[in-house]
Image (cartoon, rainbow, N blue to C red; front, side, top):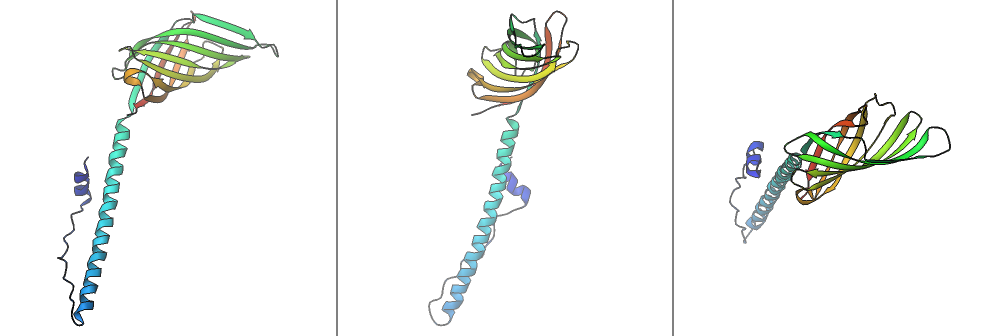
Length: 209
């Protein structure tokens, strides 16, 4: 929406001001001319302030609209086979306390056409404590056009593979078309008996100029 349309929307018209009265220079009429000039200047100033306020509101609406339009959707389903590398270290302070670092890959089984993710490689660190574990990692995605998008993620879950999984993620950076990308969202998932997992990830992203 342009500024002209917003001016029309708010019902503001250009002020119709009377012509400036000439200042008289003789006799007692001089004071009357000065008062008229001061009154005109005061009215002129009020109209200028009013128009500036309106323009400020119009610009704010335009900026807000641009920011809103810059939010785009992430909606991808991932299938991740059993990790390709995994190393576990027992901490030794209490039973069932260990650290794990693993790496693996994922393939997008479905992805929004506006943000077409294709494959990914992940590196994850876990702390297992009894029947639960915390995790965080990096998730590097290759887009359909070959550009990269780099995520971080974190979450917690049960070691019982029948329980659902979830995490929160952020987009940190990208390459090519996605160089200045930022975003955030969540994933929900499940473990499978063969060690693989399936995830549904949704969120939003924006690309700076």
